Length: 210
Image: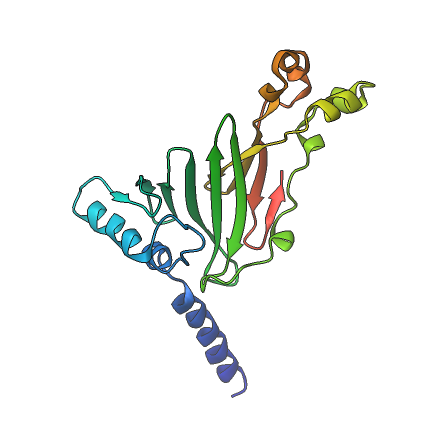
């Protein structure tokens, strides 16, 4: 008699988690304007209408230019908000149910530079520090570089430290993008940097460095 109520409670908890999970269309439409300032809710809805009609999802934005939805899936939406900016919204499933929303804002001037932000499904901010330990400059360097007596010189010269972020099915990848900022000295230090991006795997609770 005691086990049955417990089983019912557990089932209700599981069903509640399923109910709370929202599809990416709903989340994209309800995204606060502050996250993608160049576009309003109406313009985000226009993107989806154009896509459903098999038309090019292109709209005029607040800045007087055009924004284009470049990809859409059940896990992600990518929008080129301007000629030099893009925003990607990615869903990572939580073990407790629902999704973590990861927003990747990238600006491409001379080099690509990405910024991450995380949200719950009601678009309240999630604590990024508890979700990922962001890579530091030294993480991109080889063991030989870290032991070099010239490491201090590289740190001084590489004042501008940019990184780009892309998502994969199971996590995030970070790439150092501003080595060429050093100009003629770039080739001198190129072998000091790891050739592969830094990979983080999503565990259902946080991103873990591989």
